[in-house]
Image 1 (cartoon, one colour):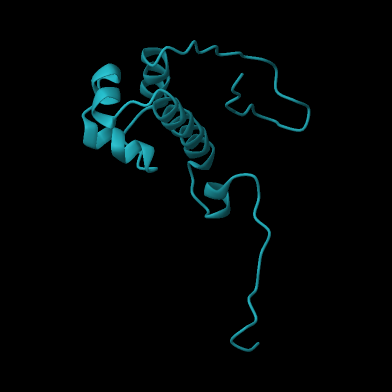
Image 2: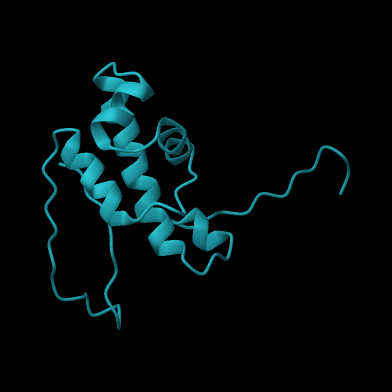
Length: 110
């Protein structure tokens, strides 16, 4: 292999699983929630300070969450943030598909 050859490996649907993280499914859910929160804030043309006041997080913590630093923030808190930003959140529980012995958690936006 010379300097211009680059080996590329196809990743899966979850970058956190590709990286071997034990909590990959939870991290993907949080990443999707954080992306939606960020989208709502930008679409509303709010500053991070305004958004932080509405959702009840210190601005530095909100900033970190929006940059992917959400380990200290629960999924429940992120759902609460969406509610405070004027979004309804529905949680649907259904039987797992035959391909999965245990269920999985996913985020779907309407």
